[in-house]
Length: 182
Image 1 (tube, rainbow, N blue to C red):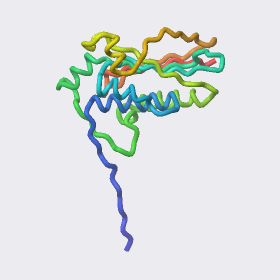
Image 2 (tube, rainbow, N blue to C red):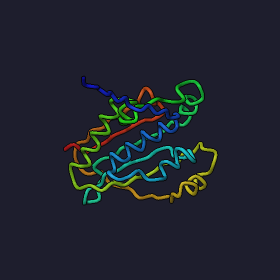
Image 3 (cartoon, helix red, strand yellow):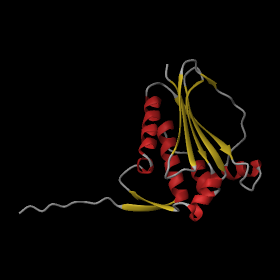
């Protein structure tokens, strides 16, 4: 007599802010190809001062060939986390959080990772700080260990693909992808 054992996935429950951080973390790591900088966790969990995270792929000529912008609508997040929406989510711990929030998020993340791996690009992570966080720009930057910069990158020549997305289950996060396709 054979015994069949079926293992069920472990369900984890994450608060809305933690879910937001995990989705952003997955995107940054897939796009950049390196671990998510600690400032992202600090700017979402510890001191919610980050308004936007930009992951830019740059070629050998110092031209930008792709960019993923992750923009957090903190006003909408506050409303949704305080009872007007879901304040916690249950997830299968064996699968990507992005995939469980939205299949389209997983597809975008996979597409951007493929762009990164298709050429010799370096990744740069840039940040935008909220103006409505209740602290000055300088205080927010200091709390997150950021320095103000004014460096600009030129886009490489060619046609580009531009897609914007917002997940229904995590509607405070806007994902904008722009990449050179030819």
